[in-house]
Length: 323
Image (tube, rainbow, N blue to C red; front, side):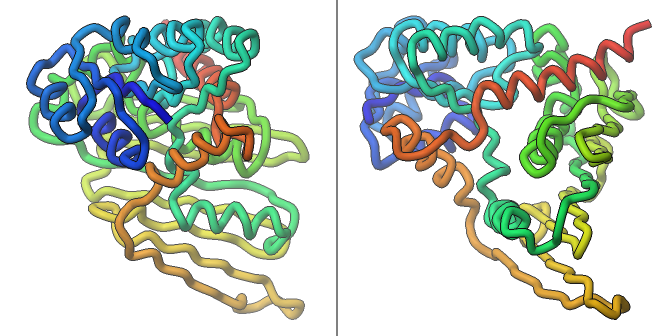
């Protein structure tokens, strides 16, 4: 495919690397140093204005900007006839995504959202085992995700709600919500709070959620910017066993999947452990799914409708927090 990359920061660079087998015709960022660096790496033409990037002759546009820009750039790209891979959460609120959902349907374009956690090997294997019925009918999920920030974190754009749309809830919390929906199906907010404990500013640095679905299924989730040792832990409980995912590689520790199978006599379960001590391929595998969806060979795993449902839950939590 011919691609335009909009946003040349850390995530945009990762997206460009994942798409290296394709032709990157343009890279866009208002920061000249960042766009020129990615242009040298990819061979794409460096442009400053996203409107110019959307207008280039490309099959698809990859968007990795701050949250306030995601939805409007994606909408312009779809209306220009492009397929889109837009970074999560795809916008700040569901109202921003409604026109994009409608435009994707009207123009028959794929709008894939960057929920790359679905493509981590332990999580993907857990989903396959769950779908095979290896732990029986699903009951509930427990999820925890967090990091501790860094010096000067409160001065970054994530702490400006007009740009970010919120704090840790819309950041790492979005991944926990998305994974819970992927395993359990549609969920709604039963309880949610998004307090600020440590970092100064106008956004939340922790969130605690209880999500409810059909057949009494529940997800109990906590995401934190005050997790002083980086953590990812996700447990899927079934009638006949459980799946536990620990770590995401790097500072989060080796990615590991544990399957506990309950025995007829109960007692200690039958346990199988898989470890994935490999470089992170989630962005590359997600891009392969995007290409397959554009070519009509697969459904996008995590699309704009998933982002809309995700932000509906985020909106409900923030609405509850209003005085």
